[in-house]
Length: 501
Image 1 (cartoon, one colour):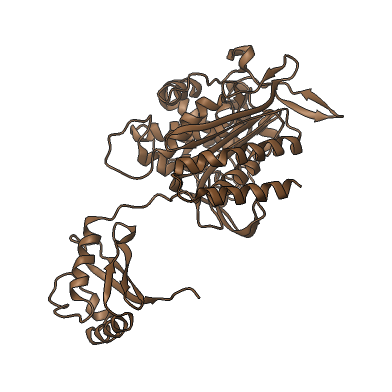
Image 2 (cartoon, rainbow, N blue to C red):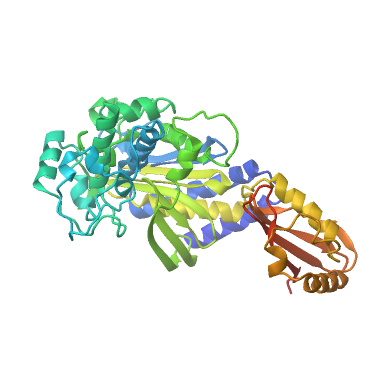
């Protein structure tokens, strides 16, 4: 029955999407979003959930279900603070990049420059490279996956952490060999932030990132949160909710210690989305837009799943990698998304953004390891499918437009092509004018008189394509420019666009 309701809602949304603005399409989708979350809460037996949708620079919808504190009957809301666990990791890497941008550290230098205890660690083999800061940021340091163990280290003291390092680390791989999720790596990044900045990582991130973003209701220590605003964590055991002890803030908090509200975290999501597109505008965030885009780049390969099953039932390929404290995915529809989940005893959370659509989704729950990533992916995939939101397009560079106009003066007869000055030195060695002329004249004759030359569709600043609409058919021209200045045409293709049967 739930599947039928879901399908009916999709049909209704698709039918109502025609002729609407993007904002109107999203507004029309909200009831479906609320229903999907309601069904998820019931199915997973969550004590509460808070979720939000960010679009075009603002939190356009926030909703909550259930109780943040069962004993005191405090309802969930977008102003209640939830522990977000490993969603903290990107704040830590953002702080590292800020220090890097200020010239205070380098990502590829050995981490032992800042943490002496790492100097004489015993790696898997003697030919292993030294751990770098970048290794720590991308889960490539060779430490073993440590989620169950790491979750219980959150509140340990700096002395206990230092003693642990002095005793020696056990490695599952050599540094730089593979991806393996490591909370220890991010705890070490917290120590590096303190060493370089002269402040505890909590103070540095709060001062340099949280406050500039307006995240004034975000905390590291749960005792600092007003009691009527703190969500408590639970497990469902023997048909009842069992409250889970909260971990205190400590040396491991850089991997997962933040406690925040939906309204606060949406500001962070908005900042990540604001890094796109690349542009000349003045900088206004806690770190440069270029550094935010660098955070989102797939630095460490995880896997390619040829038959990933998505929450909506779709099966398709996905490419997965780890960025800087963030996960990177290219999905079955060739869409790029950036995300991260969080899980600690009593809590589960997730956020995911699609930068090309300027949209993101966030959800928090107070159930141990609640799989919020699955519902977020289901909702946002359904939203993009049913609303057909426009994808961000790249502006056409002046040189691409210029070369398009110049090409159209030469086509289809290629008259004076070799003396035109628009082709790179390789061009007429790789392409022969007589052949180009014969092929172009045949295709132009086939499609008939030209009705319209469409605008360039750029792939990047120096590569793109455009279509030529003819009386009896259409053609597509694609070309690539050379790296010299001014850029010249080094590669060219002209094909007929086959009409769908």
